[in-house]
Image 1 (tube, rainbow, N blue to C red):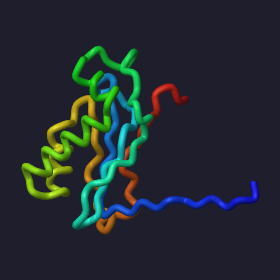
Image 2: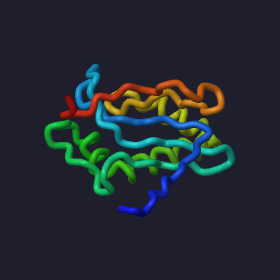
Image 3: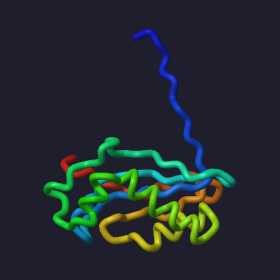
Image 4: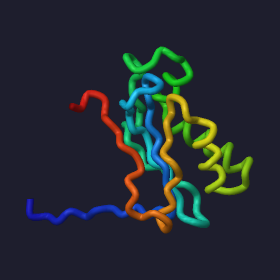
Length: 130
């Protein structure tokens, strides 16, 4: 235990967090991914769920969202690429993703790190946590 840890730094110019809300209007959510970018670079994903996704059992009966939960990497990569291609900009693509998907997939505002560096972006109550 004498080895020092090596923390990894991820530096974004802006980011959003997406959570899955099992029941619309609920304050309970399952954090899925942070999506961020640095100006002039491709977006980065920081996954908050296992590589194989999570089981939709007990969370949703909707086949669309069940597929999202089972393969969040494929879903978010495909959707974000579509919006970036359509808008010609990583920032505008992320904003479009946020604007078009605010039901069971709840996004925080795109937080610009140079504008509000200490703003708490969202309060999330983890399912099962008390």
